[in-house]
Every structure is written in structure tokens, then in C-alpha cells.
Length: 282
Image 1: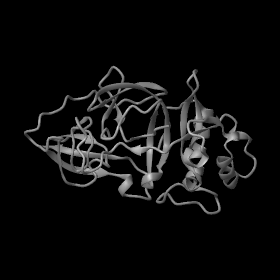
Image 2 (image 1 turned 135 degrees about the vertical axis):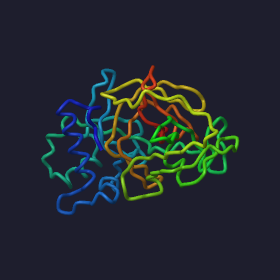
Image 3 (image 1 turned 45 degrees about the horizontal axis):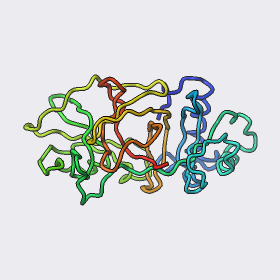
């Protein structure tokens, strides 16, 4: 779970990492093991990371609050103006919190996975089974050829079918936090393509974002450009009691149900940043 090199300023990075670990483990006297959800999740904190603040896009360390608990959806305030977060931090660090100057709280509506209901085929989606979603970028391993998608789309080691019901290949690997609770992890599945399935274009490898960046989300509806403005070391999705690691945050929601697994590229390139997991209406 790394925020480097998205954030490189020592003060920002050190505060974000300290908060991430402390809010995951909880009070030193009774630390919570990594095998269960982060301590702070019990108190309305969704995640910890960094994000770009205001028109200057200055990166700041931040705590992401559950707006359904705080009733302040969309508000971004200094941490001193987030009493729920302060009470949790006092329980961990005590009352000497002067070092938190420059830390912000972002009140978000909890995100949901961009997954269409299993009985529904989202028009234009490339994948209908095991779950409705979208095929992402191509990958090679050894002599095998396949594509990535979200783990909650390929949530079982089963055959995969496109929106027309045609056989695509087999899910050979999956990690799905929503179905493997109490462990923070990536959300990814690998589909080995059948020999007669046309190969998607190869990419230029992985992109490493070093701060706010323009990206392209390539879903079944086409290509949409948006801005990545933040990154979290961990993030909790309350609706699924699931914890995810290393998530990028965009400036606004640009996806819809059925877009889970859609590839995200560095804008103007074929370098892969990741794929779509979920979205928050706030």
C-alpha cells in the first residue's frame, strides 16, 4: 500500500502514511491485526491518502469521511473541523494533535462497485458472465494471452461470456475484496482468452502517476477523459464490508453500472494506470 510516488513532498507523504497506519491499526494498547478491516472504519472513516486541494491542485494528506454519517456530502474541511475524525485521532494519539496542521477531511458518499445486476446485460458491455462488466487491458504471461477485469466481475474461476453470450475464455485468477472480507487487497481478475477470440491491441505497459494527472477511461460507451486528483493507501466500501488498497480518485464520477473492469490509461497514451472499480455519486 504505497502513496509514493503519487505524493513526494516529505511533509505530505509522512503525515498521510502515519495516519494510514494508525487509523488501520487503532490504539497502540489494542492494535487491530491486518487480517480484519481497519479500526477507523468502525467510526465512519472510509480511507486515508492524499488528494489535490482547490484550484491550485496542491496535494494534501487527507482522511475520507463517510458522508452518510457526517451529513456533509462533498465538504472538504481542515481536519480540525471534522469532530468525528478528531475523536478517533485522540483515542489513538492523545490530545497533542498540533502536527495535523495541513491535514484535511473529505466527506464522501460511500462508493459502489460499477457492477450491473447478475441477471442484467448492460447494453454495450463486453462481458456478461460470471458477472456483468467490462473487459480491460490485455496481458501476456508465458505463451498465454488474456485480459484483465475487476475481481468482482470475474468473481469465480468460471467460463466468461461476452454480452452476446459468446464464450470468451476462462477466469484463471481472481481477487475480490467484496467476497473475501477482512483482508485489504486489490480487486482484479484475469481471463485467459479462448484461441479463436481476436486479441485486443497491446499496451505500452504500466504508467506510474506522480501527482494529479489526466487519464482516459475506456468503457463500453467510449473514451472519457478525467483527472486523477488523489490516491488512498486503503479505502472501505461500506455496502460490501470490503477494503481496497491503492485506489486512485478522480475529480468526478465518469462511469456507470457495468463499467467495472474498464481500462484506464494515461491520457494520450496506451500506458495503463488501472481499471474501474466503483464510483461515488458525491
